[in-house]
Length: 364
View (cartoon, rainbow, N blue to C red):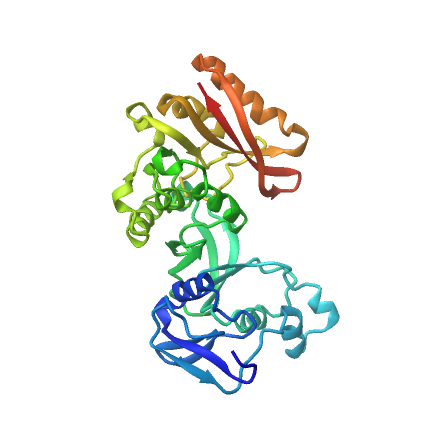
C-alpha cells in the first residue's frame, strides 16, 4: 500500500469485534490507525490492503487518518489533569470485546473524564464499566456476580470477545472473564492429540476452556451451575459451531462424574486460595466453600487410566510447588493410582503473594 493511500473496511457495528479479529488473522488490519465511525450503523476499520477472506460492505480511502499515538496520560493531560492528578489514574484496565472494564481509584479526580479518555484511546470500544469486585450476598453472591457500574458509552454491555479465533459472547456486567488467563485458554486448544480426546470440563463457565478444546476437535462434557453462565455456554457453542462436540449440563460436576469416561479433566476452579473467601477463576460456577483439591476425587472418578488432569490452584508463594503437588499425590494415593507430573505453569498473579498455577498430571 502506498504511504499516501490509507484504506478502511466498512463493517456493520455489531460485527466489528469479529471483523477486527478476522482482519488481524489475514494480516491486513492496520494497528497504527484508529477505528472511525462511518455512519449510525457502520464503522470504518483501518486496513493495509483490501481483505480477501473477511466479508466487508466496501473498502474506502481514508483521507485524514487518525493515528494511535495517544496514551491515557496524554489524553487526560489534554483534559486538564495535573501531574498530581495523573498519579491517581489507573495503570491498567481490560478491554473485553467492545467493553472497557476498569477499577477506578478512590482518589480519581473525575471518573467521567477518565472513562471518556478510555473510549477515545480504544476507538473500537462502546462502553466503560467500573469494576467494583464480586457480589457476596444473596443470589448474586451465590453465583459470584460481578459488581459493575456504568461510566460511559452504550448501556447495553453484551458483547463478543475474541481470542485466538475463539468467540466468547458475554455481558461483563453479569459474568466474568479473566484477561490474565488468555494464554492458558489458548494453550488448551493447542494441546497435542486433543482432537481425539474426551474432555470433562468440571467448571465450564461460559466456555473458556470448553470452546478452544472443542474447536480443536475434542468431545467435551461441560458442567456449570450458574444459570447466566450456562446460557452463554450454550450460545457460545453455537457461535463457534461446536454444538455437536459439546454436551453441556447445568449441574454440579460431582453429580455426573461417575457417568463420564474422560481422557482429560479440566479443573479451572481453585476455590479458596489461603483459607479466606472463595476466589473466582474464569468459571462462574457459583460460590463454593470447597477448595479446589476437594474436587479431585470426582475428577479421578471420571478420568480413564492414563488420562490427564489440568489442576488449577491459587497457591501462596511460600507453598509453591509443594502444596499443589502434595494434594495431587494424596488424591492419587487415595484412588490407588500412580501419578506423573507432566508440566507446572504459572498462569498469573492472583493477589499479593499468591499465584494462580496449573499442574498437568497423568494418572495411571
